[in-house]
Amino acid sequence: MTALAIGRVVVRERRLPGLVWLAVPAAVFMVAFFVYPLCYGVGLTFQAAGGPLSAYRSFLSDGYQRGSIWITLGLSVPTALISVVAAVPLAYRMRGPFRGKRTLTAVLMVPLTLGSVFVADGMIDFLGPNGWFNRVLRALHVVDQPVVLIHNVAGVLLSMLISVFPLAFLLVLGYFSGIDGNLERAAAVSGAGPWQRFRLVLLPLLLPGLTVTFALTFVMAFAVFPSATLVGDPAGSTRVISIVAYDAYSRADYSSASAIAIVMGLVELAVLGIVFGIRGRLYRGSTSGGKG
Image (cartoon, rainbow, N blue to C red; front, side, top):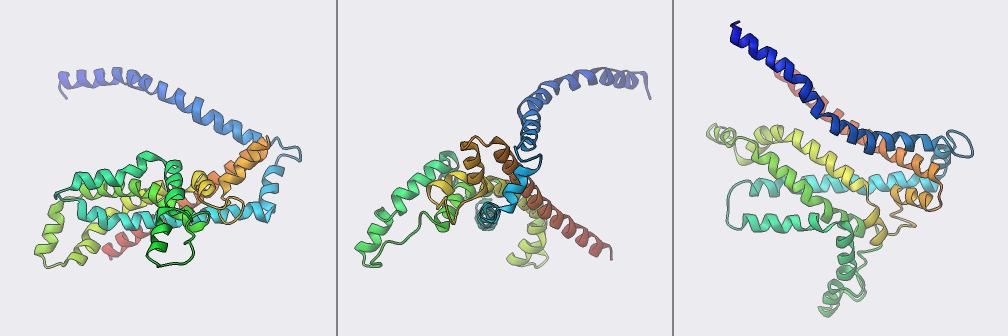
């Protein structure tokens, strides 16, 4: 190694502490606004009047409260799956240049900028019993009674899809854009049809991105509080776990509210662990199959 190269290594080693110091503000921010609130919230769960674990026992032993977990999963998992599945063909078609692409992309991004509260409010005005949708149906004599599309599971699911799908589409479109088009062209030259090219070339490359997209959209959909409250039935079929936590907080029962929030986080981590575990098994299976 020349003296110049050694000098460069020494300079890099001397600069390393400076680079480390650059991470200090981010670390302080994480401690102040994430680690400390998380630890404080966990501590609150053990301060219930009935004992350290009474807040958890009270929630998990009550079937009405515990059922909110399954209601939330029954809304968030289908929302994430439908969003990812619907985003794939649309992003596949829009990955190449065509007339009106920017306009269509902008239209698809509008619900993401409006927020779930605005979307839910618009759904009430449009899909309500006296909204334009039912007015048109009655004017055309398609139905005699209004079609019930709000204040039920269907309304919440539709509201969540409108809010979550743009994110899934944007992510999948980005993953598609990162795939080298020469790979698909090479498969076409080899005689592979459109479906074979997608299944054997694009889908394996897209799978990691689809997993991440599902994870992000699931986490976004799991916090379904605005939609479940505005266009759902918060006391019945759409009583999600975030509503249960809010009810405890509104009663100033901070131990129970914190315990429910911890349960929410654990449920999300469990679902994400299952998803990434399945992806890992698929990759290990494909690798071992290729070696054999």
